[in-house]
Length: 210
Length: 299
Image (cartoon, rainbow over all chains, first blue to last red; front, side, top):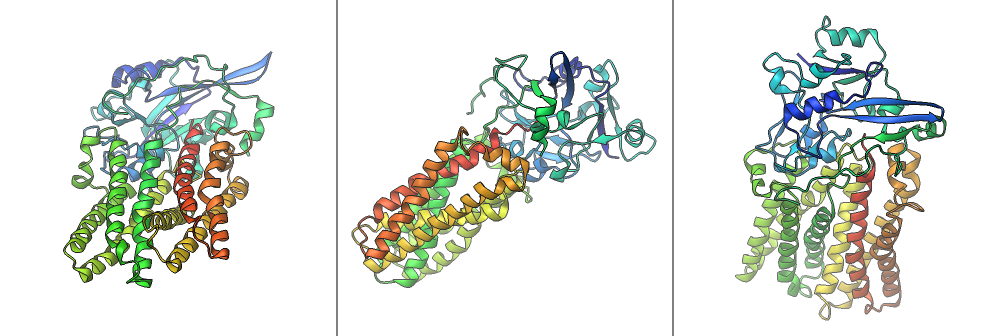
């Protein structure tokens, strides 16, 4: 079994329900996100459009975070999920430097690395990840990519699928349908002061560490 | 390159709560800088002791002490950078051998042990024991110097850091600071021929390192769009351009010129200035190279 995740960007409407569900389910602290939805605006007025791209850990088959972790805090589960043991993590931030997707953060409350685990605790009991349950348009498809009869496998077969930064050789198990460079490549869009919807995001100070 | 689609798309990120950019900051710069000195004095000291055994014997204890001090500064900053510093022992209990961090931690622990044995041997005036341990120290200092390049290479998100280049830069940083430190440690007591040798090591290290940085600066952007985007931070108008050039000037350009003048004129009075310039400048060079890839948004 190899669990994978697919987001159909044609369906996503940027409601951020997945973000909130993830925060609640995993008790993600303020100023940290396991999953976030990126908005990119395109075109010039009046011919404009907005794209929405949920970003989370890609659970790579060749995960750089797992490789660089000095204490195996980041490790593979049998179902392909890249999980994290927060009790073992020493907070070296090597995984943050290694992840090409910016998916790992330092939890300001535990001072350890953290990230999306595809809700491994829910999956182990037969439940779907909380973001999948919360999505009002079923844009999130989760399942076994090694099972050709699974919904995700059929989706992959029938759609034009992309992954983020395939050139990194990480073999992500997180796929996007309907995504283009603007959604998936950080260099394909500008980041300008004053263009953010929320400009004054406060990052919590780490407790008992730098 | 994909940035060239922006004029057509006018794509602007309007919401992305990106993670804080600088994860490894000045503490890691201190780590790399101190390690360069700690291993560099071993490499260059070994050369001096082999070539001028009698005339440089007075440096045997200073070399060990300098190495112990700077390796411990390196270790102190390594531990300080951990968000869970009191769990650093996990590396020894739960080692993960694919990680350059783990491999480096174990080897540097071995090096520290050997350095203390060298100090003990010198204290007890057992010269042959000291010399035997010195060989072992050199062998261990090689991977200790190189493993940070391994960590940078394993940082898959940072395209700028490539193993072959970083490996050579780490060795050159060690020989640069090693020769500079020993020039200062032996001030007033080193004979001219030893000074000349140290000056040549310093000059060649500085010039070679400068050439590699310039190679990256000029040709790097031609190969990869991520590298081009990262290097824009040190090119004209980039927010780290000034620090980059100040670092290059102090670490490499000034020492190269001073060494050249000194060797050609057989006058070694200006070498301490070259040494101080190299040691101080290297901190800036390392810092800039550490920070700029972290400025690039990953999402």
